[in-house]
Structure formats: C-alpha cells, structure tokens
Amino acid sequence: MPIGVPKVPYRIPGDEEATWVDLYNVMYRER
Image 1 (tube, one colour):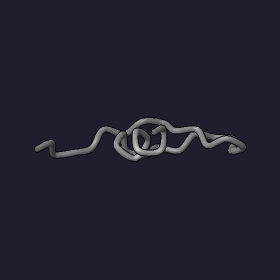
Image 2: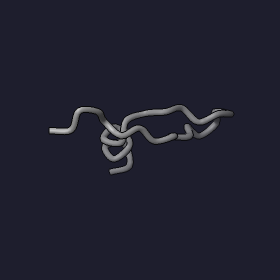
Image 3: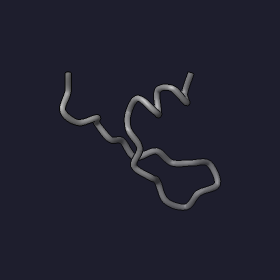
C-alpha cells in the first residue's frame, strides 16, 4: 500500500487558482 496519495493540481471551474487534491478524488469526480 502506498505511503502517500499522489497529489495533482485540480482547477475548479470559476476558481482562479488550482487547488491540490489527491488523485483518487480527481478520478472520482471525472467519472
């Protein structure tokens, strides 16, 4: 099991700057 979850910059539509969220959260949202 990985020690840390990879973080990726995720830009929310309408937001000015990207926030760093975990990769699994992004994959879940993109479905």
